Amino acid sequence: MKPINVVVHGALGKMGREVISALCHEPETRVVGAVEQKTTEDFLSLPDGFGRVSFSSDLDYILTTCRPDVLVDFSSAPATRAAVPTASKRGVNLVIGTTGLTNSDLDEMAWLAKEHRVGIVVASNFALGAVMMMYLAKIAAKYFDYAEIIELHHHQKTDFPSGTALSTARLMAQARGKPFFLPALEQGQTSSGRGQQVEGVTIHSVRLPGLMAHQEVTFGVAGQTMSIRHDTVSRECYMPGVILAVKEVVKRPGLTNGLETLLSLQGA
Image (cartoon, rainbow, N blue to C red; front, side, top):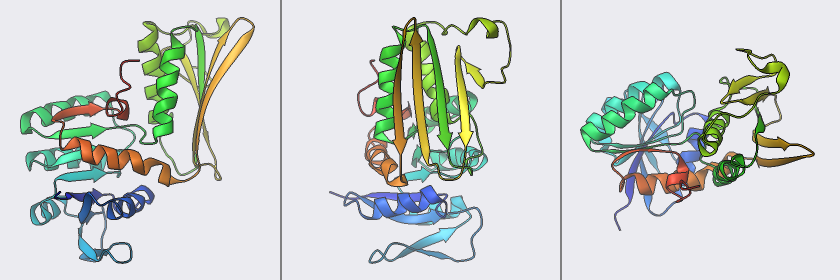
């Protein structure tokens, strides 16, 4: 079988480096180019034994010369917004794990995917355990009136609440069919010192060195609580999800929002 040719956007970031290593060690994928905002070299060395690839800050140049099937993007929200139309116009499918994207961004991606007949997979979290946490939270949401989320990340993560926490809260409210109840003292408030409120779910964000990525969803009802928690200890946890998305996006025209669709979990 012909390997899927991939360009990595945000190649020098922590996630970008991990993605390159995972793609190089996957028999069905091949890294053919790399992009970073600032570069001083024309080539990027791959892990030992895999050679080197064209490297540039000019995405259009890399897409033209390397002719990839898929662009994997773990850069920044502004860089991703610029990359999506550039790649889609060239018929390149996209797998996007960038955080900080808005609903307007997703709407534009859906239009671009349809207009240029490409596939775009966007996920707030590529860890399979995190996807399962969100799936189980959707199931539990139907049976509880109160819920809160604590999300904890390393101190270099600039956006908050995390994309995973926002997605979880919205999916829970969607499954429930209405917002959750707020504690009596908070009803009617438009903001809270305890955290950001999303669909009646208060999200608490923690940013500290020593953390990786963690999330706990706690449901409450009279006399009891129930918690669902997911912890990551290294970026390796995201790679099976990224590889799955790369293999699937070439088969799926249009926008796919969330890894749960690829895992057939969207019916919860």
